[in-house]
Image (tube, rainbow, N blue to C red):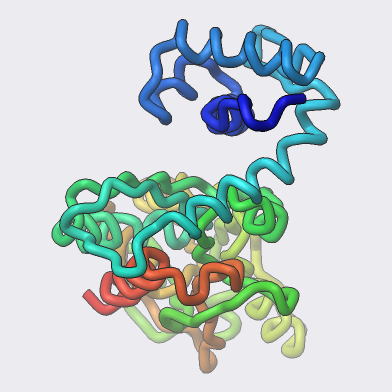
Length: 298
């Protein structure tokens, strides 16, 4: 292959299609029309002697060769972007795109304030906030597909950096007027209530079961449901749920829930940011991490 004549823009197109799995969306992301993206793919297919992507009802599915190319090319493009960015970052002038993964708690509690804080200073920035769900966050950070993630994280490798943005405790959330909310909860009262257990990651209330179990009691769990449906379920039923405080307060504001104290000292959870160390001192990255910290204080 004649590298002197190779068009590096083809790699940008490849990376966009690899991530979006859709030619039209890929074009919108990098500012090209659908025909232009298709033409670039045709050129790249000829150069690497592989189909690269196969069109299916579920989108553009990468071939094994494309999967093999994806990681090193994404890393190379990320390194090129870092190398070519100016040493100083001017948020008022930037049009940079940031990709941030959020687990459910952060999506509900933090996303609105993060967007407001960022947009107030840097209106040209493009934020791509994605649910973390069951994603392999370390792998996405390694490949440069994420700038950072916000959530609760176990021990991570030395190639990653982590910073706590705030801590939270737990409360018992229920609809207003539920008799259980009129008095301080005892262990027996907490166990007898009808409980909604959150099936989404990041809201594990297993500590309640452990505390009750030490007293020969157990929660009466009658429903498991995703976090994003919890507020609507609680507001229209006699169920209660043990939720982190900031999340419960958000739901109280949107669905008129009442919040009660646990009959024991609540443990705390740490919500933090996780990023790859190659971004430690990158000006734009430093700026956005600082905006997240500001947003958590608002």
